[in-house]
Image (cartoon, rainbow, N blue to C red):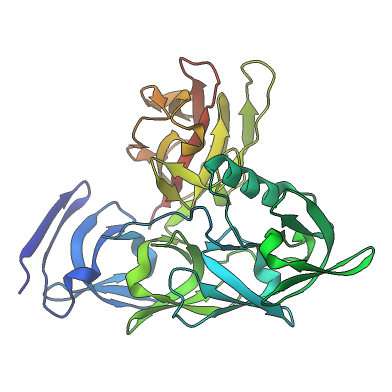
Length: 405
């Protein structure tokens, strides 16, 4: 038998005796929607409806009552030379595009080349990156380009910085085939850094009901309608009912969004106010930093949240059933250790919580749960720090509203 685990948390105590049907490698820390945690418990079963923990007796937890699962594994974000496939819903997979024929993309897992190739409808794909730049600033620029190039055409970004607009035809082992105003062009794929698909032709339906965001060891992020643990794989049904298999051993974490847990980025703010220090203006960016690169705090990337710049005030209405607000805050790694801000939360215009001054070297700060009961609005505030607004790339990571049962 495994030793008894006893965990005391803000909403109660869960005690379990772990049985030998699960291995230590499968242990998980589970946080439910009330804030209770079970730490380092073997996972026995994971279905579309529930999770079963290998306690004695086994404990079943409805999947809709789960906030997150965290495994004792670390993710290594994509780096220079890695390929990516970016989906239209913002997901990214560390896949190497092998070919595109009949509007179907075939790709292999870059760090798991022996796995079965992934096949995705081309309409789900926002971009294919063949070779990530080695320098962080160049990667940030590439991510920004892929999101901000105007729609209307497919765009091939060459390694030398040139861009070619046209209509993507296909991809094979040697060439990217593009139809341009001068005819069909064959581009040696070794010269191509990325292909941005025309966003007017990509399609991912809005999420209805529950969705699960999985983070993998290779830095991939996948949003699924449902997940089932079968043998050594997680069978993930994506938003377009496309299914892919992910090795269970590659899963680092999983957030469950739905009835109880709502990402703030999925809601439209009631008001966004930006107060420039001088004259520069900055946008509110969802699920990315203010430069449109991945949300990243001290080497850890986050799939959900908001990227802003000082001074900003983002206000949301409190909807019936909203109970708490949670987030982890800090200055994004894109600031290179610089920047200085203070984060704050206001309820109906009154300051409820405020962080100390944080710099680009400060560790991330987990905000204590902010009760929303009785409030009409909550406002996420980023104030100037000691260094005015220089490199104040502020992140609200894993910004979530917890709703009542």
